[in-house]
Amino acid sequence: MAHISTDDSNLIVEIEGLDKLWALKSRLTIPLAHVRGATADPGILKEPKGLRSPGTHVPGVITAGTFHVDGERIFWDVRDPAKAVVIQLADERYARLVVQVSDPRATVSLIEDALSEAGRVSPM
Image 1 (cartoon, rainbow, N blue to C red):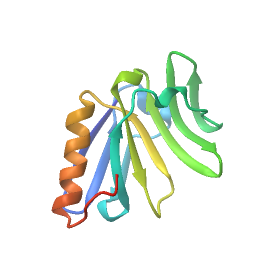
Image 2 (cartoon, rainbow, N blue to C red):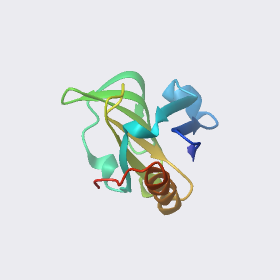
Image 3 (tube, rainbow, N blue to C red):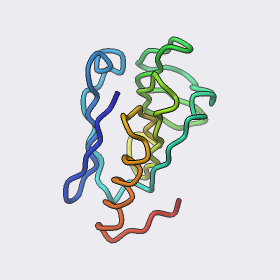
Image 4 (cartoon, rainbow, N blue to C red):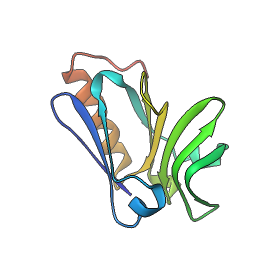
């Protein structure tokens, strides 16, 4: 699971527990200027994952780490698709972050509010 927070200019994604091991990451810091928006998307787990590099994928159990699909690099950390949030990025190493959070609606609101406060209106 991931914990998401913001500061004045960054989106901070902290990977918690054993997911750090499976995802091979513990923290991602993304400038808010590079965040296009966020959505809660429980159906995302049905999408093709592409090539794992590096990471963990056990269907129906966990998808975590870096995956490459259609020329994009996507970071995953999801066990429960009902709690998945997709964060769209621009000009970053990853095109998207797909992470499990405790409250998807609150997380999407947090991100959208941070984008609004930063003077950007999300195109999503």
